Image (tube, rainbow, N blue to C red; front, side, top):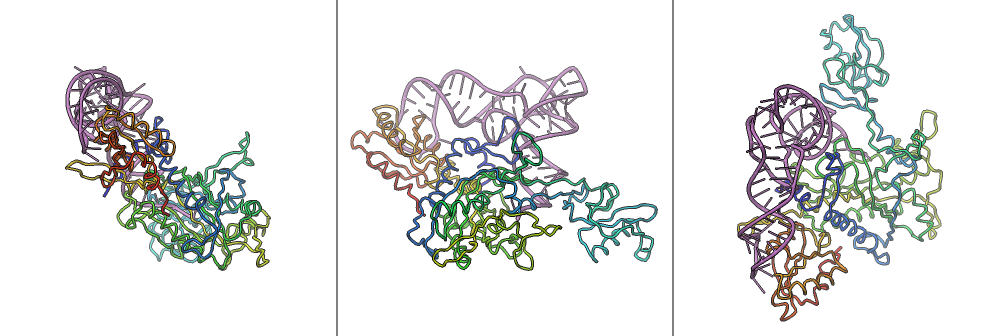
Length: 534
RNA sequence: GCGGGUGUAGCUCAGUGGUAGAGCGUCACGUUGCCAACGUGAAUGUCGUGGGUUCAAGUCCCAUCACCCGCUCCA
């Protein structure tokens, strides 16, 4: 098993990944891509964009698809109207106040802890519990007895000063007995967990200018749904794709770039008729899984996992994760690369009518205490008009949402190998040629007898189309190893025979095999090896 | 947010209070004939950062930041 720190060290040594702001001591949860890393990540994103969007042929039915479909792209702003996040549900879910217990080390949502004031032996304390109702009463009683060191039959010595009330009604926690504590005063003051990054639009930083950096790119697609329909002649079913940065103020960033606070997503919102949505869900689920395999992830480390019913988000009627067995996870555990969610009509309807919530199994606009929508929608009609059937309806949505940084990390983990060649360890990144930052290295065997001249001419020819490197430093073996370590799939060496018959050697990174190929045919050969297979 | 560990050259690491080190890598010159050759020479450190103790701190103490492991969290 590969050790993660070796990959981390290689990434830094060769310029794949650096810690953000490193010279200032680094910043937790942020990472920079170096000269090679930026090429790799760009290749991941470009492969995705090409395979999903520009390379898609809407005239034919893709294998496994119910019908033909169209694909278009979008690139929307990172900061959007704050109401977007209220209707999407992020605002409510991302603004929890939490209290920590210094002793039990547990963390509670401030509004979910309740308790009762009780007095005994001349002392008044607040006994808390995470449960309400009958059970909460029972639990608080037994905990109060225990705290005051009383037996069950002495329960009448407890004088209760209140019903079960929320911890939010308590201002001072010094006499609060935490849900898992056996002394008072162990709870910290409530702290706001702001999982969205807040910023301010305009020069004045008042609440009226408050806005958020997007926690996902998807909402930008939903709020532009009507614009895309009105401007592009797309017909259902069709998908809108977007690649871009998102921001989440993760509590515990960890595991290299896996959980970063600033990250890049590759998302598709695929709109279709409600009746066809189960078939499209299955199509995207299988197709996205196959995509990772086509770029080199091994099926033994990649899995497609359907969520259990109780795992589904409030809006979803089906979700599958594509997960990878990252080497930093315990054996048997997988980390999410991409989620494919059947979101129904939750998003478009929420942006029309106001934030929806599930009530009695049905999605309905969530109402505030005043009986009005808790978060008001745009009021715009986001229904699709089917001019064949002459009907108007809200499309259902399938959302394949992939993490570009997580995918990049998975490709790096999968690629890292230590081979033994003649008793010597060879470090090699076996990246798929489409993803490799450098496609080929051009090497004169030795720096004389006209070899550099031929090699440089070839280099100039290839450079016009491909990311190639020229290297004449040191012995040839060292140069091969250098290229292996950064994942260059091919090395082209100009040698003594080149002058005689205009051939060069083409060395394969993984097999180490060398074949002689005509100098004039090198570009075509490389083109063939870099062709998309998906 | 809690507990434990780590932090010294680009990388991997040695250095238990008294002159800042090694291997690898990098660069230059020479050499070169297909898988990390060789020779000569060179550059590179506020010992993570900030305080403190001491005649003297990479070394001891405190704080802080980052990374790793375990909790917690992960819409």
